[in-house]
Image 1 (cartoon, helix red, strand yellow):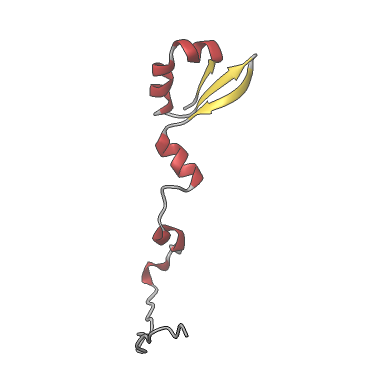
Image 2 (tube, rainbow, N blue to C red):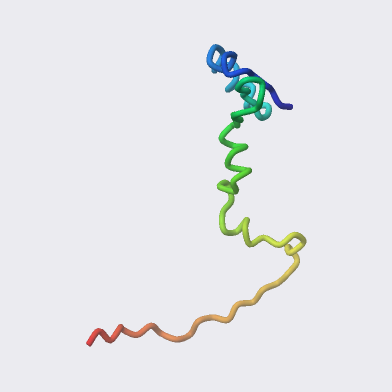
Length: 83
């Protein structure tokens, strides 16, 4: 569900616009044309992908049954030669 407000309505009723943004985008018009969109932070993060971590980004659909065996690293680290 989306809401449309004029700039004047937005300025006069900002708290109601913020509440409406929890239900969906709020389009703010300027001279009858959409000029801005107010979103909840959760929706913004979802759209920009900022709510994902590396595991989410690497996830393969249907890959839950894939077994992956990684070789163990057996070499010991050695000190760096800085000479």
